[in-house]
Length: 301
Length: 285
Image (cartoon, each protein chain N blue to C red):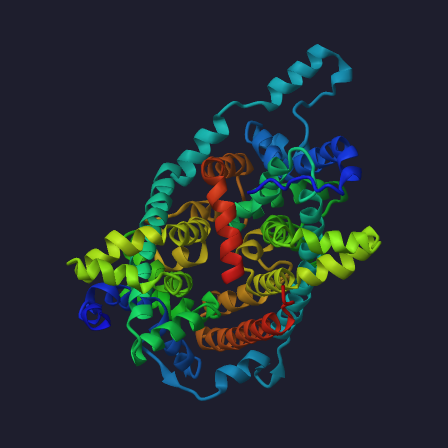
């Protein structure tokens, strides 16, 4: 994100800049404090999570240092919650399924939908126009409208596994992706492709050697938006996948809550930290693209 | 050239279209068809006319208010979150486009909750709400209003960062000379905000308003994980109400599908309205 330059007229704001920075530092720390509280509680014995959610010791520091330290060792359980959580949720498998499904469906959506978008923009006939209209239309349809029929069809077609669900994601995610790629293809001068084809490229080569590299900004936007969607999606995979065998991370978290509503909060805290950590790492690594992608995606969607 | 490309349709369009058929087109039309049938799977349907639609509102000749309740509860929820999210996001965006040291870091912090999914976020907040409310021997699902404000807080916390990014992009696109002209004419900061910034920001405001509104109407994950529709079914938003009707009780799949059709019409109408407004309200720049 571009740093805004201080405008010549904003001398007043600059004078208060240190003050505002301090205020915003406090506000943003408060903003992310729920996540910090979860991190803190993930190292506490189950019984103390609700008794004393925001402290680290059963005794106050004013009762004397030794009492305070003893209180800490009473609440602190080290990584016990983590080992429990990993066992209970089979976390590494869930992580693997989530990663595979997210990477797989994003790749599939980006490649297939960009090809489709280029084709229906360049070849203008009644049926390509119809495809475009349907893609636009699919963006306003909420998932609840298709969830029952979609999950039953997916079952009948044997798509209830991590590979099959990629097809479902491609199908349900196609609308937005095709729409966004079409918007970009319209701005690519057709002469570039014609030159490539006159030089002897077939359409496939022209597409992958010339057009696809130009589309990089939109590819990143679509990839980021769809990755955020698929990684965090709960309802679609919980209906399509065979949940006794394959659980993505959101499903694993939801299934920690047992049918009678009981939750092992120690394990829950740990699994929440494990679920959030990869997102923060991804965010730090790709921050620039994520924020750009969100800004671009929102304006178009 | 278009003729040479056209021969390549099996490679370029067929994969996406096959998936699109399975993932959207067929389920959509079949879903509309099934809303007029009695069924438990997709193959054992029996046409029943409009019976599913009347059963949404009347059960055994008596008025059933569950769906109506969740309809107004959802509408209220959508409007309340819309106002809170947009006002706060706009204010933060205004502050963070000023020359403050560390503004990038603050943007990062505000945006972070948006990347975390609804299920995970809801359990984070469920722990905090229930431990804070334990003092008053209450939980988040004590009444439909604790549930309501709990949901509002979680959803606002999640989406403010997102809207903030859109508003920041909009604010940075306002040309500086317009602001300078207003200043030379002697406009106060308040006048500049209302007479220059907000009119120039109308496109972003329309986008964010409708995003918040449709997100509010379509909310599911947070509702499921945070309140589960409790107490009773009093905190069920529309999406969860449909899910509950479809999978909660056997024999009601048809009614669930009929509710889904109504839900679809509602969301589609909102989208159309947005399209209208975006086109008419945009200020020439």
